[in-house]
Amino acid sequence: NRSIVSTPLAPAAIGPYSQAVRAGSFIFLSGQIPLDPKTGEMVGGGDVEEQTRQVMANLKAVLEAAGASFANVVKTTIFLTDLGDFARVNKVYGS
Image 1 (spheres, helix red, strand yellow):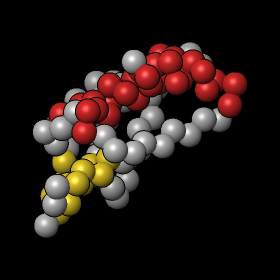
Image 2 (tube, rainbow, N blue to C red):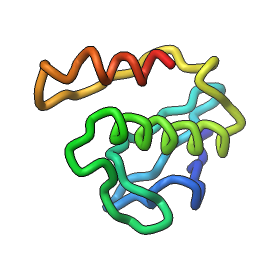
Image 3 (cartoon, one colour):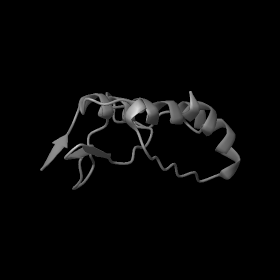
């Protein structure tokens, strides 16, 4: 059994996908970019730490809508356009 997970506290899906899908006891979240869910605008203007905080806030909102938290996460993937940002992204991600 599959069900769609959605919350207005994270950016709406922009296309034919969902914020998350629950399949049995698993929850699969779609990727996030640093969009403010209230304004639909990108945040951070080049500040990778602020952008990472927004992405993590979006993911947290979707997890909570599914009745989960970061403590339940088994796997993540982060895509960087500049490997030089790794330490700063990892610092925020680790918090």
